[in-house]
Image 1 (cartoon, rainbow, N blue to C red):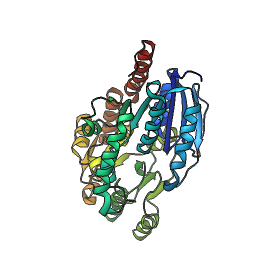
Image 2: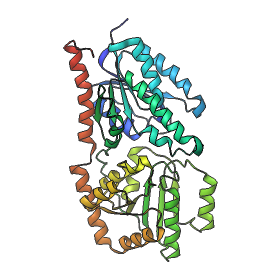
Image 3: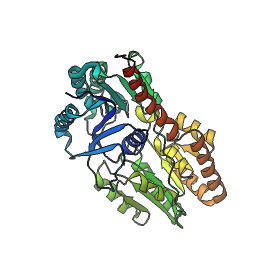
Image 4: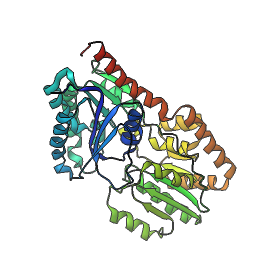
Length: 388
């Protein structure tokens, strides 16, 4: 059997599409650029695929939730056949696979869990889980997760807030690799004539979908008719309910819905917009989250209107690049939008303030260096004969 290579990384997801911004455009490409050989497995998705040096792509079929366990067998067999020494996974369900791999290979393989959310807290707001069972399931998941983390060599936190829930797991190496944006492409885009509000991401109730629609409704009721609300991303809620709201409130000319698109393509839409929205509901995960959208809006030089969470307020106030408000106050939201719409000088000023904060504090370059350092450290210990 050929010896596994320390510079090879088997990166996988059974949930995310291959073009996921964090997994592919940030992490996989950054590691490949630094000379690591990356074997990448994720769900297939229509989009422009590219050939990247050191990055070997594999596409999994999209399956229903109840059938996703089939991916486990595929990924395990692929890893057995791989020469990678590092197993880097992005989904909590793959903790089961991490244990199986560690039991088979021991210290010969390093397992790295890239944690995108605090799952026990997220369970409390999952719409597909019956409300009456969420609390019990959250506690059960926390116990299961605690056990399976024993088979993980390192945990990467996409949010600093997650680590407080795992303070007792001191034996595990942890790294904060925050989900800040890549420097955006140079696109000579000009904001559209019609004043445009934008949101990019998964569209659900707890991520503010109907709060944004209520805002559009209120703007129209206040006589503000020359605006557009652009929503980009998959709708993970009752689409008929969304369509009925738009028709009932005569918003057809004001709402533009676009499907999920590749990271490189969203910037033109950002550059053509005037305000970025982030009206998340105050769920445990959201309250402790530094939403990536905030920093993308900064990078795109557009001011922000976000939920009045303490962390959001601090970030936007310190950078002077936006406002926070109660997401359930459509009147207050509409008044703020109209205020920015009428004060073009202030809108541009806040956009430039945000861009300066992005360049200084909130960009991907520094985060990618921490990711690379993790794998360089693993490799260094192997060369010194240190097997943990």
